[in-house]
Length: 270
Image (cartoon, rainbow, N blue to C red; front, side, top):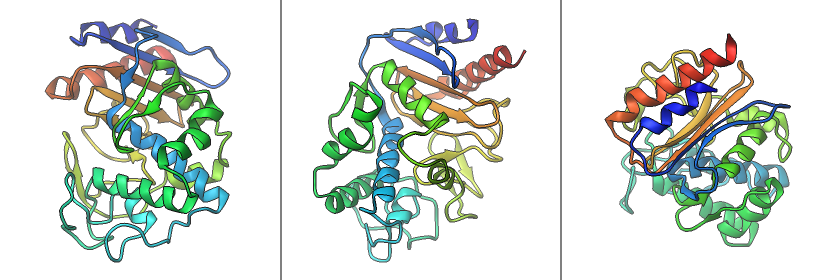
């Protein structure tokens, strides 16, 4: 696939991309062996561990967690009121605004760990990484510090296309809008009203412009990260595209990411 070669011009010392489709060999390009920091794409792994915990009965979405009045559901949907960064107090009441929050996801992981009776990194390994054959590891914050090779991203993308660790219905709930109608800022891309989000999964819906492509369907879900990483899954295309780089997010990505996505989809659908 010629489109994936676009990453060679992004100015990253290391970069890798893969297009994943069920029942087909992934199309790959770039540094296959390099271990990348996934940055906020880590949140998708943390969210998936939550889904496993929900099915195991270890956690309930309505369990209190985070600031007063907040629940596991609020934390996973960036609706707890906690700020973007830091350990400061909430800046909104739960359920009032969509405030993208790294501390919120760390509180979510703490809630899962407490109810599972083990450190979150151990639970993530047992619930998600080992069953999928992921070789990377969580080296810090469950919001941003998973480190792993492109093969891990490919395996995880395959799971999101054809879930085996959780029921399809569970993933469908996680990729539907939670707390509809909340407005908020999509970091780096601007304010949206509404700013739709699932349980850890950012939803494209009607957002324009967006870090995915113009050719991606409104049902596309995924996440991007500050180290120049992203993973989207488009159920209408039955395909996923993942990219790992070591170039920090900036204005370059606002054009490069959608252009890559659109070119890959054009090749896929012609």
